Length: 148
Image (cartoon, rainbow, N blue to C red; front, side, top):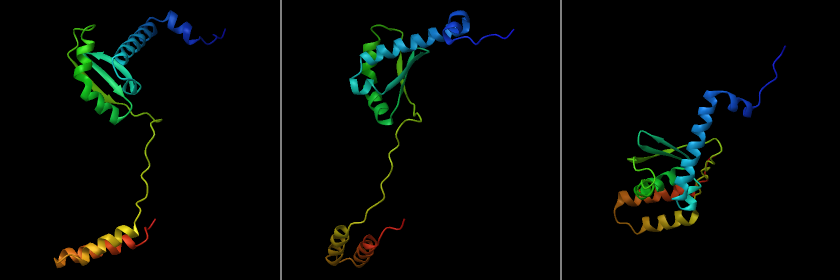
């Protein structure tokens, strides 16, 4: 007789190991919600996970910019969180980049005829011969079309 597949709900209900995993996930979500309450809205939305490990709060952020910002505000956050969790000794910030994190495309460099003209004018007013030659070369390089 073939067994019918069990739903996730049934597995979570009857398997002790999975119950522990579910409890840990719930605890981490509650901790994340608590942390987010103490953060400004823009920063809170970039905090994607929180865990307590060996008296340290480990926070995962989805962007290097927001991770840096949280590192600067972590002393104030720690003092706020110590009211409910006096055993906390520090905050560690980690970066989590997901596949969905948008990557900025670098735009192709653009050369400006105006910039070339300004540099050429500067070269003509420069008395130092080596600097004048370097500025003239730079001006000519800016006038060339960009090779793709």
